[in-house]
Image (cartoon, rainbow, N blue to C red; front, side, top):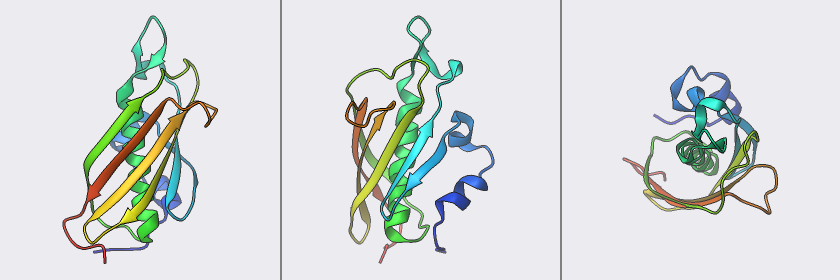
Length: 142
């Protein structure tokens, strides 16, 4: 069953879940992209000496941002699964700063959606990670 996807409704009606536990929130979005925010928290730090966020929460946020990009491009919620998501870390996140992740769906075929995105901690021209990947559906998008 498919229904029109509304990212604001999706985030306001969420109870718990992985993204909720990480504190991921919705920023801005468009026809095929979404920006999410991952606030710095001490319990998400991977290296206590440096205060740098662990890579796992950043990857989880980027998976969610690109997935939302797929639903926005389709104009509807449609079940899909991450088939492949490559992440290239360019630098550590700055301790104490919120990480912003932008995910975009740039192409959809009969059963595969292609995505890309980047994460930064305040300056999009100084990204901390890039992602590229694909999502697969159990049924046709069309």
